[in-house]
Length: 304
Image 1 (spheres, rainbow, N blue to C red):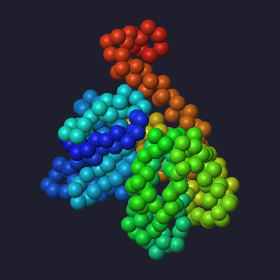
Image 2 (image 1 turned 60 degrees about the horizontal axis):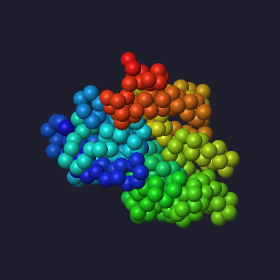
Image 3 (image 1 turned 180 degrees about the vertical axis):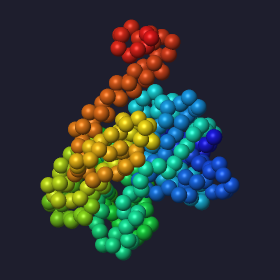
Image 4 (image 1 turned 90 degrees about the vertical axis):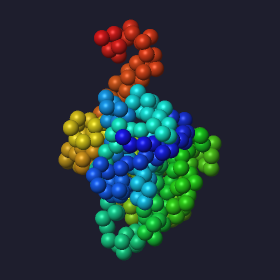
């Protein structure tokens, strides 16, 4: 079992948890926290019969052996998970999985000469944070754009401000700092302020990453995206996260989750993502309505 040390609601339907992730072997240091890197993810299960949920690592404390995860409720399993409190435990907590961010493997002196721009949308702020933090710890300041629909859905602002070189916050409705999309901020920084970037890293909703990549391609800024949003199983067995990158078929969970955003077929990936949304909705109805849900619509399978 993997104890939850802290459980906090960050915003509507967005939750943060600190989890103790010990190694079963002799090491007194928790394995996941000892070896994880920015960009990697874990798979959690609430109980023995629970769904496997892949979540990008938001933060880690190697000394205390803890992993921080942030998730948004989208289906029945994540809804159940949102009700867990400090003192509860996960049945399984597996990782680190996937591949770390490319810059982790780069020569540090070469990396220090690059200018990074991170673009985070919504809950995508969580996986962006450890990347920016890693760069900060290695003497590299990165510019960060964080976008949210409204002020109430903005997360980890203070944490990001502490590690970013410059933090630019924008909200769709203009309820905080400035009004506009993250792409508007990119245009302002590059075209109006004359900033130059060697690499852009965009993580957030698929539609946001698509339009960021369309813009950065015009601006000739190499762009990395994380396709964690389309992962289901997390081990390459289900094929749900199959995606076309250039002329190759990849799987986000084993080949990624990060890819060259200018090569990703976003329309295809979003179409695959929509297939699973219907199933998540049906499961959520069964969870919320319990014994009163009889599937009379003939669509959700609740009558079977």
